[in-house]
Length: 472
Picture 1: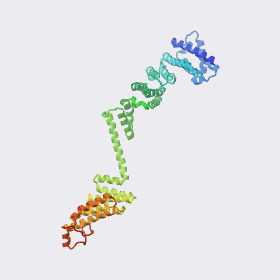
Picture 2: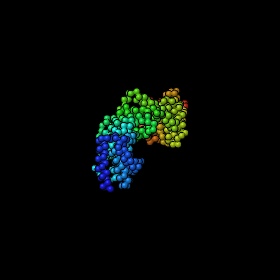
Picture 3: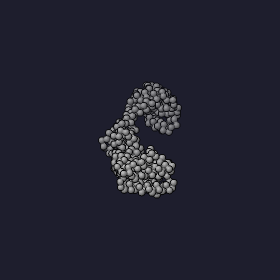
Picture 4: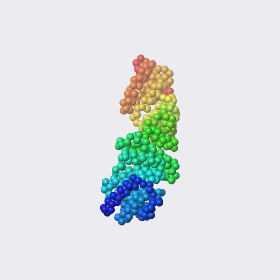
């Protein structure tokens, strides 16, 4: 086997070297030894047909020898076969790859690799109609070779393929090119400009075939998507606003009802340096903001519907006081916690008193609130304010007005006595101090014989209070 391998290697390198240096497009047509060449062709093709390098490499020594010797004769006599078929080149490449798999040394592999690349070049030169496939496959083979792989020399091979093959390049070259460009860029082997240039050219080829290649358009589309995925890590640094506009504006047009997509498109374009004063950017932002406002309005309405206490506070801020009271009552119906019910009732009482001047209902609501939350002084502070504010209306003279003030002070004092909250206590003390200057005068009480007597305030208040006086 070792002897055969060395013989094959030597003769292969010699034969390929001669054929690529001259007569690379010779066919067997009209040659004196056409019969012998065609016979060699038939014999080797019988063993090689339908087989890739791995299957050829797996042949036993006898069959591999027959295949190789006859391919060698056929190739040496007519590299272009009958001038219409590329078999002698394409089969030869698979045979060289098979030799690599049959125990070749590193030096031999390096030689085979160079011959493989040379044969792709010669195939392209000999069969112009296959140029796109040949240069594309050459670049792909470079990508898989140890001597090339993820190197800039391989990228040059892809660039050559793009230049020479153009729109005839196969879809299979796209994803590996994306992987290669991403690796080289991430490792500072190429600039963003270099990366962008080759990628955009490849995308142009893909787009042309997506649009025009009826048989394989969908494969170009899938391969382009995989290439884009391979470039994800680098695309933000490689591409500019125009690229992302081309990618994202169709997405925007198709998804104007999706807030998430609208937000993504706008922020992505801003992040890629797109001018926010550009007409398209203004349109996208306006569409996003309108959709956000629409969705927020729906969500807000749903939230307020499910949270009547929040709705009540909003109505209060909008000065819709009666509607606010209705919402607070709705919140009370839905609430199970008595303390929260008390707070809602207190809010109702405050609105009724301070905004609607409904004193009787306000006091009733405050009393209900106090029942829901034991030892809570604020409802009594509020009632005290109601009384104090009614003094002039409920008293015909200073004495009667002073009696109403005493009723208010009694509520402040009670609030202070039951509530441990220091703020409530301070508020009660402050109000008592203010209104102490308005209680009945000692002389007035004496003339009426009401000193230390218990009297009724009358009016809407109807409270009984013990008369206390201040000096004249």
